[in-house]
Length: 171
Image (cartoon, rainbow, N blue to C red; front, side, top):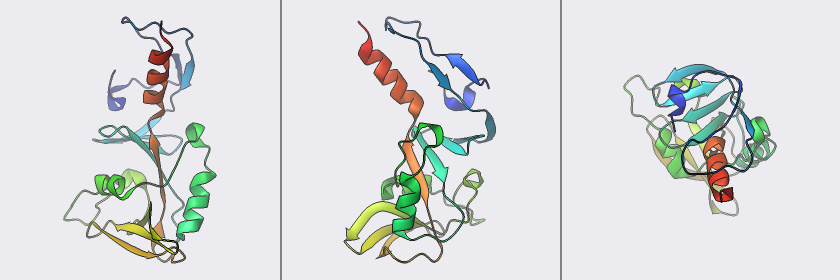
């Protein structure tokens, strides 16, 4: 399979396999138009950002202060690109961090002023872990705290999920 960054830009197309795997029915998958590339990342017109190395898709939340609960509600309400979104783990957030002397340690394709980003991991009933993209460290604080906190949604790439399902249906 081609890397997402190498895909020709097209809107609709049947997904076919030319090897021994037999696909019972061919489904049409929507591939939004690519609007920007940043080496590792590909941004689509629907605001989804694909990490070509990890196979994760990202969606930036509103560029406004959010508590952990508000961020979780926003993520659960998402239907962009077929849904399936969740808050990222600390490890996934660490994977986005790229030490840079200019201080922009998160790709500009994410288009948020991210200093602190909520993770899905909690410390206890009242606190959760966050990740700070300036120094690249993790910390925990109260879930009700919202100043400078942003939210990112993440999921596995839908395209990979389709291929696994198609192969599982093969005779």
